[in-house]
Length: 242
Image (cartoon, rainbow, N blue to C red; front, side, top):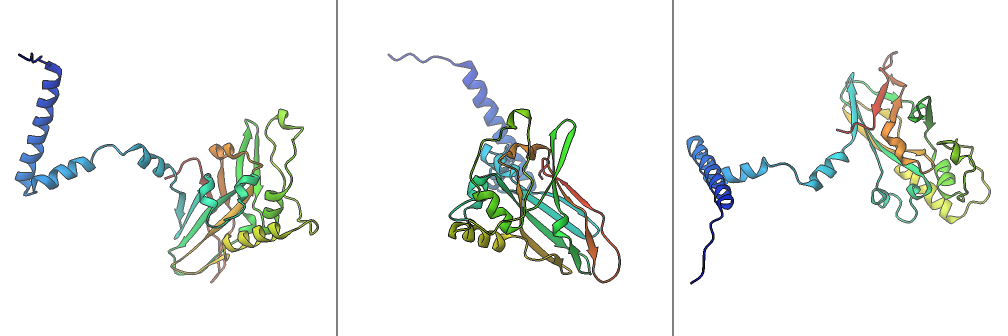
């Protein structure tokens, strides 16, 4: 004869589950909701899965005022570059791309000074640096330049300063990357009323992508085209994504 062992903990769990199920079904009946739908709604209220939490961290940071919303999404995963840069990724060369979206909800056209945009990063407690964006030519130079050991690395973080592009030493790989960068960058500085402009900005971080933990995207110059006047600057905290 087979013995059956009593497990009080298991019975308590089953009793609790049954009580919860009865409560959901009773509430559904009172509200006129079918029991199956009520159970489905209860499942949807459970905490999100780890993958869903990871996806939410990839959402863009944004700031909105005076009829303009600006969102910024740093591309920190190599796969994000595949579509725009199918052969050689700037990310592998230490260059960061940030996808920026300008949404103009106002009734007048706006002009953004794209050359004035900076990525501000905290190198150490007393050293904050503004990194200018790269042109497509500068991006190709930075991403494809030979990698050499930095003799100053032991003295703390040091960011490269974009230099004027040199015409010598360019091959088909350079030309392909420059063309891809030009195609993917923000296409225009003018945002028409009730329209959206989206594209990439590029910043040479020398591979120090951990600096994004303190980074801000600073957009200081946005003007109204129909009459004199400017918008308040945007300072988007990239460490606090929505």
